[in-house]
Image 1: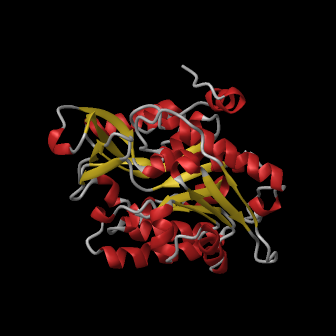
Image 2: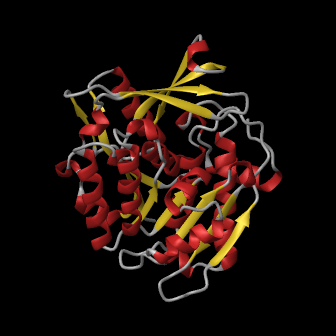
Length: 336
């Protein structure tokens, strides 16, 4: 089994304890978060091997992040402390449907100080899978560290996964940020987008047209999550013009908090990918080698996992185990 290495931001989600905007909030629940950290925790909670590369503050919140990831089974050898900045906070407001909005305290924060020298290139090369997002592209030196990690991983035959996870408030210039986040797409083998990101990066709201665009710039595997409607997926190699694609319906649950749903989807896909016998350091087109049935099952697994995480508040605290996902897939029951 390969190791899934994620790189980028880790932070504390301060989730409002009541519905409504932050101005009306009367209390918050602390939860470990940050998209790449969530993905690493998801893989580990499902029983896989993962590692997280990032920076944390020398403060109680940084200690909490470290202990939370370690407790999930994530390798935190490259999650290093710095005294130069505090751990980031994100205050999360939830509406009646569990959808969220964020207010970030990150000026700067420890995660933004990741440098190219902090990136363990040899470890990533031996792991076989690297996952990144776009938040770490929004400032230096972490932008340089992220880009260098992706480029070197790709040159070593590592499978590179990317979730833009677009957060406009974190970019000094949103238009420049879109360009920077979009440029990284050409260095990746797999991308996960939501509806908003589909329109933003592919300039269409049609999932098939968006997938065609992404395949055209060299991306092998495309997953477009559609909230309660599930997921559209499309996989194509450079040598096969007709993609293997389809849709998996969403799973009905009582939604409490959608934070971390997309990260859980990615983590579940990468967990299954890491188990694939055909994955090797010189075979980045592994998803295209899977049968249509196997690929559909993989997406169904990820959709189920991402539905389960929305039934509790927070991201990492709500991540499901393999047993919970399997039970949910089997009979639709939520495991207590």
